View 1 (cartoon, rainbow, N blue to C red):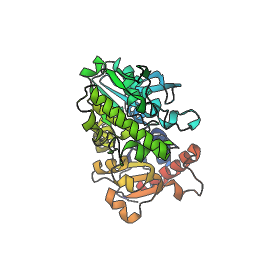
View 2 (cartoon, one colour; view 1 turned 60 degrees about the vertical axis):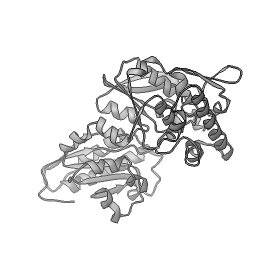
View 3 (cartoon, rainbow, N blue to C red; view 1 turned 90 degrees about the vertical axis):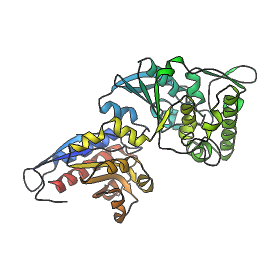
View 4 (tube, helix red, strand yellow; view 1 turned 135 degrees about the vertical axis):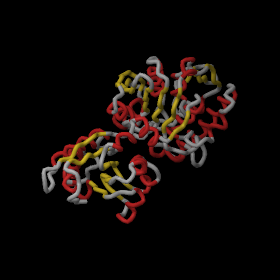
Length: 384
């Protein structure tokens, strides 16, 4: 990409997703920017960097919003197995961003021990309830990274619903509790009536059945075949009891695309009247990507792995689609996409950490950051 006609100052927009298990999107952007700024070309040129860490509704959604100008608010909620978790939401005076990952997600499990039956989404509901106290016009419900498969029962419990067993005792909400629901009482908190709820997810699975949340995602959360069967049966019970309680759309919404996202949290959000959107595109709009890319010469994006799923519409693909004719460079931990397929995302070049080391950087943040700085310098040198 050496070009003697390139401007002395190259403006780069660094807009990556996280490198899962290694670096946040913000850390990826900072490491690349450090390398880019240290680059020297054949003359006295320099690279100006604008950092735009991104998220697609998964973990890092609150951080991405804060980086773009939202204010962080902290609140203690119940973690996936009930332990207190210091969670964050983002708020700009109009829109609040609440995420599953930093409330009751996999990353919040004590010692990383998977709890496929006992994990709950209650903490997510508590964070949403806290967001309501700030009087937002809109709450974005970012659903990636969940530890539970409770159909959103825990969240609904925190937002005004009561789930009772056969003896009339209240259930707290977990995958294990689903099969014990005998009746549902209560209604959504009245404060929800005037709030726009936005469900941000790129998962299209229904709630139950062969393509549902337990079958497709349960094993990733530690569910055995027996657990999957129990969770699917429990979700059937949840839907039936909600329908009995007078929620007319309860059965139909279970088949809706995206109802199975985040262990069925998508279903509960739809039940509350949430509008479902593509997480990747919604966050690009929220963070004003289009305006920012118009002020740059090159866009640098990336994620942990560039592969077929990336082409199917993950965040780097959405970035590339919106970047127009300007060069688009991708950086990843690894790439399973051969060079002949770069054009499918209009990519000029793909750099990978795997090309720069024989070590496994996927769980080594320090090594990953150092390699990204080297890659950033190489990219900068090629631009000047």
